[in-house]
Length: 296
Image 1 (spheres, rainbow, N blue to C red):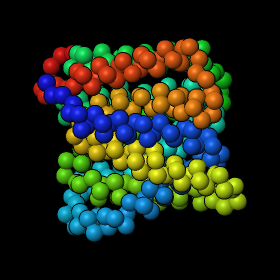
Image 2: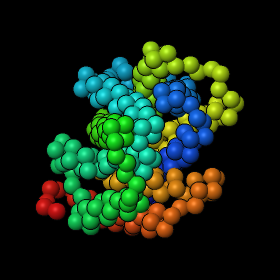
Image 3: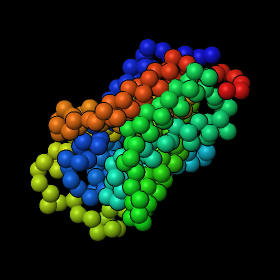
């Protein structure tokens, strides 16, 4: 049985802490979903690419066709994830969207088992179920119904599927491609795809108040560049399922930030659910993963 090292633990912690700021920044930016998603990827790529252009050029010379397809799939998946998740918030409740978009650990666990026979220990499996239980506690009584809400819920669920593809593809290709090259290519591809979609939809990137641009800038730098980069580094060293479960800490961090900066005091069920989620994540981290396939 393999364990998570202290360095990888803090890498996961930094990644989850950074992505937890996304919901707050998206709300404060108050821009359209496509503009928001495109801006965060363009800013992240603009900062990252100049520092690793030479490495990307070297990587491209030796890139195999299967790895090129995996990088393309990863870039397309993260683009779809951000677009669908941000869009879902306009149709359904935040609670419904969050609980559905964070269902990806189950999908990641299934894909990781099928592709690489990666499997969690009994303790870690119990932790994953516990974390899901915490999400349910937080969202008790908050799920919305109706055709418009159903559309938003389906968007959030599709966004979870896209996140699963992103994590699993990254786990596989990162065995052969270094982190800076991989991230520069994925972020650049996502930026191009989202910018193209935004322009095709007639979206405008001008005319917003200065606050919007500050929030979009922070969105690209903190949750995207710091958060997702940390998680991509972690997914190279750990099973994708472990990283995916750790991301369930995002709603907990987002709730805390909303309380600190927006004075949105969490309800009792939200505090209880957050504690259950954190317990589940700790069980996953403590349990580790199996190095050979066994029955859970």
